[in-house]
Image 1 (cartoon, chains in turn cyan, brown):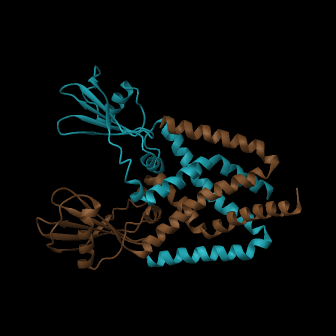
Image 2 (spheres, chains in turn purple, red):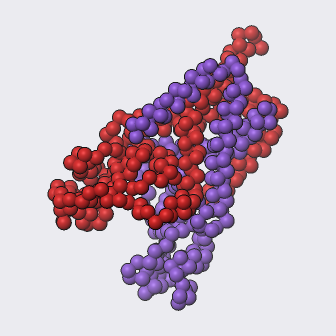
Length: 193
Length: 210
């Protein structure tokens, strides 16, 4: 019982920043209207524009080109890429703090980097949605692992919390009432759809 | 410490513990929902593989002639009345969103916990098409997870959004009340500080590098 309490406690202390991030970001997304005003959605600003001296292998796929371009700019990390009809390569560097849009025009060899200034509400929403192992970068994989740990912690807190509550006999009555009320409300929502 | 101060302190600590546990028990279904439903979000390929059985994702329910004017503008405010009109005309119910899919197509996505329907309206061809999505357990959970907001003109959607707010407050409250409870255990303070410090460093470091 003491061990269970301690694990419940230390898991919470370890995952506290994640809990707070998900809580605050959920509130932001649940009240988008509140956060749509000033400061408005961040507009990307030009960071720099220059002629790129690099080159791509002739058979390189867009994803490979994007990776090479980001490597040369020292901006490696999670990204999406698309090739436009005019052959330009557009890379969205999915940085948590300041996402960047990098556009390479092969005709002029010009690279244009636009940075999205930091906005708290947008940052929180990005962090809330950040997950998955698809990017292949060490930091992204570490974040994905932290999300998996958080999921396991959520389940553990629920199960261990129920156990810890049940051990407190004097709380069983009101606890059952609270649990029943919550379950009934949830079931009502499910029934209504 | 005086008796009354001691009693106030004890009552405050007891209140803190009681709120922590009773709020958790009340919101337990949502707590478990958000925990469990985060898994298919983090590992979508598992659901995709499980439902990769050749059955189509979308099934046509109806396609017929339909002609209503499309308002100018692309924003949700501009297109929402059109979406509502389509739902009413076709007898569809649920929370919905309306958006343009190119110059000649407007989509309305209708969601309930158990069913998702998409309506494609082609104003130039004057045709409307209604498709139902097959039920997938992973999508059932992710749909519930993503539901929220007060944009729908529907009291049940608003009520759900209120509970989402309560969960947010609960999460913050559990952290704060949990910190108070931890601090009440002197023997756990050192390890607790280590846990807090390492988590803050890891969290900040990850965000900076992402």
